[in-house]
Amino acid sequence: IQELSTSENGNFVVSPFSIEATLALAKTAFKGESLEEIRNVLHLPDDKDKLIIQSLLSEANSKFYNLHTGSKIYVKKDIPIKEKFKNTSQVFYENLDFSQSYDSSYFVNRWLEDRTEDRVTNVINADELNNTTRVVLVNGLYFTGKWSKPFAFTANGRLKFYKKPNETIYVDYLRDTSAHFNYYESQDLKAQFLELPFLGGEALMVVVLPKEKDGLSRLENQSEAVFCLNTKCKTHYLIFPA
Image 1: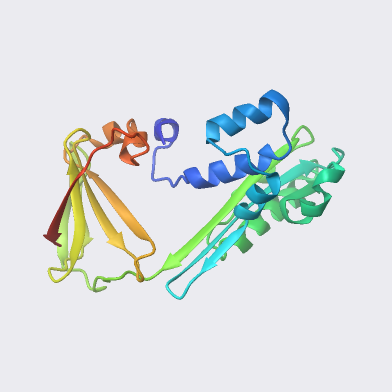
Image 2 (image 1 turned 90 degrees about the vertical axis):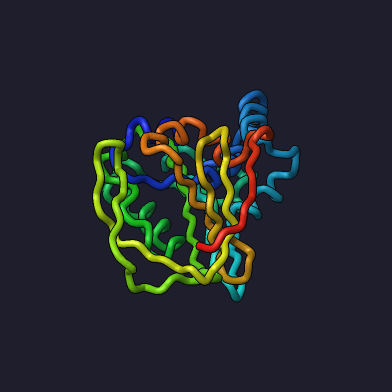
């Protein structure tokens, strides 16, 4: 997130899970020092490759939500896939002729579209592939669910929204005074956190809002603490009527 925030000017979406899942799949082709480096960086257990592979292509279709995720590695056509991967190559590994950039980009994008119910499209451009391309790693992630306490679709009015400390716009907003959500604040991060659970209580969305008008970049630079990956991350829970 810290790296992307310095290079992206507009809104962007990043999935740490997708990155870890794809690298974990790539791990199955490594050995020696390279294998140990990936295992240490991702904090992967010393399990059999098969166990890791099975967890990378999963579906969780409960009565409350749908979740599809999958990773794939495309390898240049003249680089043979070793025999040990033959049992999984049809699902996770595939040879492509990257010199045929338009055809290759189509196959990669088509696979991503299938994994994401056509929500994620045109990720790979043809001009990004050529005969020097060796490997392309991709991951698709799709989630859909219903809110446990949905808001009414009718906007309640317009409020001032700060894009920057000195730049504001007016946006439509929704209000619901009958629902209660988990809310907490971090004095260290100077941020507010709001949990919006999905129906069934098995998944939730956490909204993070800086308390200061110019606090977004500060939060981006502390993304590890924001996601409570740091064991010192401390938050204080309060219940309030939304």
